[in-house]
Length: 61
Image 1 (spheres, helix red, strand yellow):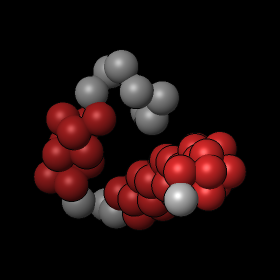
Image 2: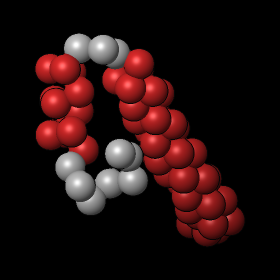
Image 3: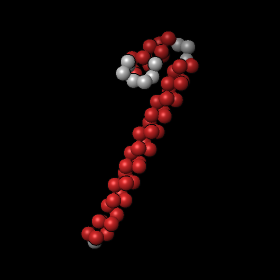
Image 4: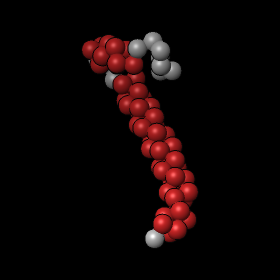
């Protein structure tokens, strides 16, 4: 049974890397959608909370 695990182990590692990359990309996309929603909002409180949330080190203005 160990030989079966040795055959599928590289595929499992590759699959985990693909899933991690896809998940990370999806989270970034969701943050951008949220940024667009906040940008369209005219309420100053929302704008202030967004600026506190992202801070100066991120790529969002």
